Length: 369
Length: 169
Image (cartoon, rainbow over all chains, first blue to last red; front, side, top):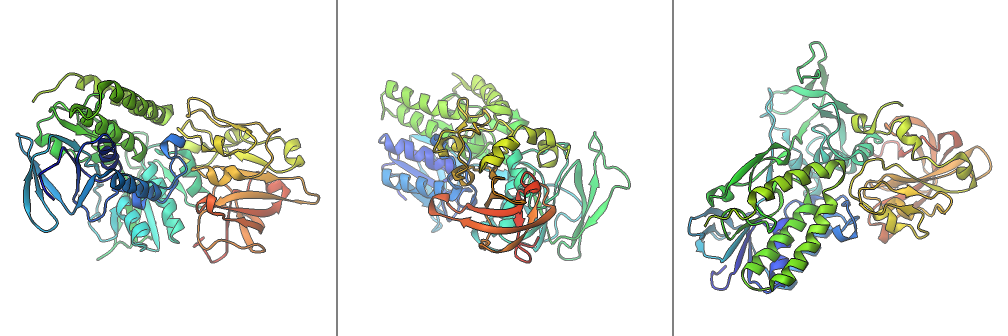
């Protein structure tokens, strides 16, 4: 990894970061992608399901295949990817502090920075939650789909968003059992088609329920579930025990925004999108000039919109470097916005679109350097 | 079933009524049943259909509309639906049995001749089924389409199968 010829540093080699890198490299910028993991692709390579959307969004293509094509695209366009590279600071002068895979410490000085750091899974606290066998749904998905190991013969899933629904289905595909999917809210959070897929395999979805405690001595041996009333209070006497070896938790994600905080970006708080988020404009540029964001760091959605946001950030950063004429950049960005807005419609998407518009309204013309 | 997809995870009778083709159409030959009732942004079924019997249109959150008169029951849409929400039912053959074609994404695949449990939308066993055909071409990208023979009165009920002792069911 060298400093010499880097225009843009992209932090995070998931769907958003790779898309940003591809777009900027296509327009002629010298791009370096840094990722702390030892494999690129973010979560794409464990997403073995077919994606939704239109042909433009790669609908019907499985996540790992989209990951493969993104890696091929970035490679073809000449963006470099450095793995095992931990970015631990961005200083006020915009220098990027990195520890490389071979333990070198570098200070890089790119002209633009795109933060595509993703999100982390939320935890849930209950008695027994530290026992081995309690893990995030993402961890289960990694074990099952990447490492091909079932965490337990029987799992209980907490949380009915798309992650909980999809991972439950994938546990079944891997030959495991799902005792139930438990949801505190009165309705299922994710897509009905995902819920229908696990229902017809006999996985009960218990809305208005939560986990009261986990039992076991040195590992999970079972859970006690409890019904909740309309104010989310446990209903006395409704407890029931279920024998499981794994408790998977899918209760939302929180944007990994520490680097944006270090840059001094203005933040806003939008619970619907995962919490504290860096304000940004229609170019995905934060209030810290030259620092762009894309993907879950800008508000938790899914890979399809993360990729589109990455493309926006990549085009905008290349434009700011003078690699593409404003008129051409405007046309490119408009095409991306059309695809993004198509994803952000309907009962699941409109609320996200509204929240996103609130962020960009705050972000427009608010740069501080 | 009076429950709702968004609260229980399977279609209520009302929701289902909007998806089912008429008895007359089912008696004529295989026809698609599109169990897609939420406005999610998705339209591969529209492109998949070789006879343009499925319309989503714009915005892509519109629900797919099937023109059952045009549908030839080819089943191409089954494996193309990312939500695994499309089935093909056929009540046209003589006798008491008809077929359901359903998407199947587990391993190992069932084989023609296998006796299977016929499951409803809640995973409950509602009867016995027999596998007639298994399509798993490369274009289906790991979504096999299994044709299972069931009693005609179960054509609108059976939406999954399990093979005894194979999938933990």
